[in-house]
Image 1 (cartoon, helix red, strand yellow):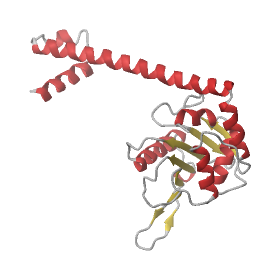
Image 2 (tube, one colour; image 1 turned 180 degrees about the vertical axis):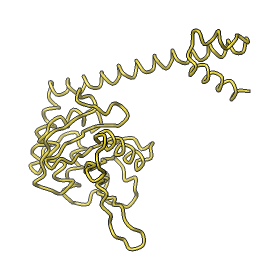
Image 3 (cartoon, rainbow, N blue to C red; image 1 turned 60 degrees about the vertical axis):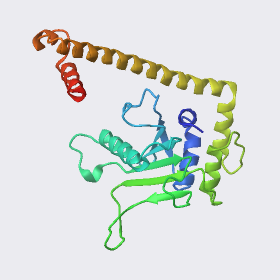
Length: 249
């Protein structure tokens, strides 16, 4: 299950609730709302990956991320996402004791921690006595590759299967089958097209920026006065061109 498929999958609250009840081992957990990356309600922008940001019944939040690529520092990625969600969820003047309770559920296709476990609960501990300190951040790393016979491992098998049909996870099965239908496949393709279009726009903007920087470089090399260049280009662009010239000398 890739991140785009899961993003569409996660719009279904019962399926998300079943996943979190299993991973957080809380059969009474309630998911009240799910915000995904492409949602109009996503106020976090593109600075943080929101495969599914869930608001739970007790007011805490849980960000579920599905990661297929192993070309990143996963611990720092999870830490960064947690910090952005925490910061943007805080109200001005809010007391630290009121900072939200946040769960990070990070699902990967590989055991990057290398401990041979399906599930890793990463806690903050005092080195001198091993006491766990609760600062309101809970990180759970789960992978689909280690099969240990647990209920979480059985759930992870759904993430790595092309077809899901299990009585153990009825909501997940129902949502998976919906998305495998013609209408569900169209919804996944729609999100994928949106991201491809955003990537094309970004690439075009980056190309235009490179052209402008190169033009400034050329003018600097031709000894065009700085004041004249700044009539057409920004100071930031001028400084970037100047810096790039310095690295090539």
